[in-house]
Length: 319
Image (cartoon, rainbow, N blue to C red; front, side, top):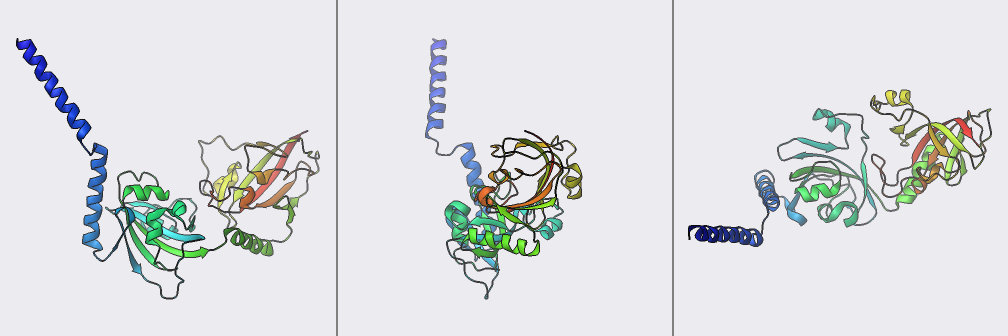
């Protein structure tokens, strides 16, 4: 009899636990999110009581208004500078070197205005709403719950941490392709000697005297890839990496890169045919537009619609 009662009690307890688990509307994860929103709302009431509420439990307030800057419209692309902290003042990320130094977080990364499409897909609904009344040159503070902060993809480890995003719109671009062409043309005007070939601008710095490279060849090269402003994105030359503060002793990339002279699927289209007809020993420079580079999505530090400046040294080839 005791065993029967004990078994019944266990069943009732188990049933209660199962019922509670299935009927509870908030999981532990949900609770963490709710707790975070409560804290963000309390922070807003204490520090920014005049802030405007926007989508996703976020808020926005203009810290430094601009009367001369044009008002943003909901199209095109936007260059903007920013820095961000959590609610405790811990540094998260920035596009400004001075801000990185201020927080003691300066490093050899690409400090430049970020570039995103002014659309829900580009910056998210929350930031679109925050920018709906903003002007070029204004300084905004935007309080973001973790979910909205994470969607911006401006810093890592955003889970369950609200963020304070300080944002300054710098320039709105109506036509990103035309804008990129203007940047390239301005560079070419200051650096003559480039010729156009297959959408790429190429300049022979030093003609080689070795074997002529055929379209079917495989070539081995040293390379360095920069922004037009001179920031080094990538290289397989140890000395170049050291000069730009990008060297890693644990990397095994500092050796020759092999690539097919024509189309090589492991490389961007802009490298296709770049060395055909040249001779080994040739040193060249190239400007690769984003159309045959990393396009509207960019990659890593390379921003969307970013033209690339490439230095290439053709060491050897095999036909």
